[in-house]
Image (cartoon, rainbow, N blue to C red; front, side):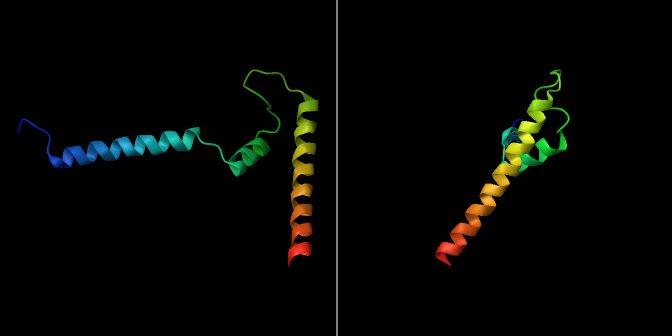
Length: 83
């Protein structure tokens, strides 16, 4: 058996696809993922090694709250207007 068998080719393709999917999952950002990760690390803003800035923490909290209120208000307005 000097060459690769079809089973070896299939296993190699599957491994390559799994690696690609893992890289895409690791590198991609979604709105909910960044929101939940930001909420879970609220005491550690910025890159590792940066000092904690209370203004940045409060700014992020205020921004998230204002964004949520705006989104809710927009949904209510659109529902009231068009439904």
